Length: 257
Image (cartoon, rainbow, N blue to C red; front, top):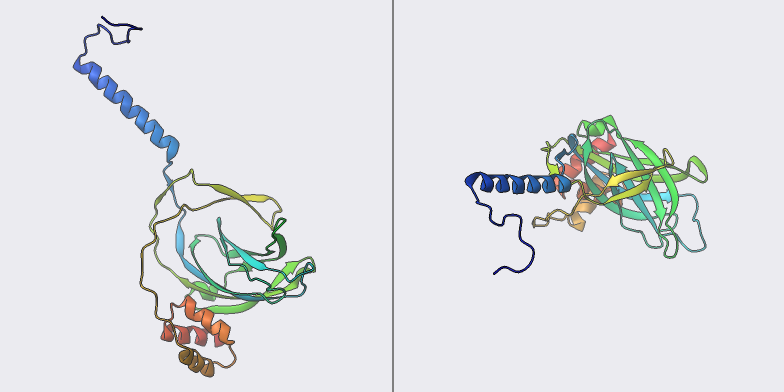
């Protein structure tokens, strides 16, 4: 005896064609589910890896009662990077942060913003700049310069920021990325409207041995060779060049020429 509603396939003779139809239906549902979750989106073409060292800044004013806690937000194409906060950095924050990013084809400028980190309110935008990547960097040279900052004081009157840039034309293969990654809205100073930015999902980290660190004696000797270059800038160049002494000296020679 069978109690309850009868199933649709009751008293139905199952044939090989019926089994194939069920299998095809399940495959179609699985394929539709896959397309709803993943979209075959090819990552944009990159021309190489850009290394940016954000060394320090000299600001003309400290906004607020206490010393500011500045940090830098950097936008390269549609990708956004941030430095750590410089606690009590005030008008002379130091970060010495090296950012390695892939440079998309057609992108020749960097959008930079400096914020004051606040505990009980939104972080305050202090200064910003649109920095054009020097052609010498794209040719493989290391370039260091102070770039003017704009802000409440006016265009180019908010102070300046010290940055070191180098470029390596590494070939990047296109890859499949997941399109349901979180999206954040980042204010765009140039247009005044929020710009959607896709946040890259966390990638598994591969353990690598730490690079050799130049000793204080090595840095002192290099500084004696280039007395016009600040020692903190030499440290930043060393980080950007993976602590390779010869590469650091070549980069400083290019900067001095």
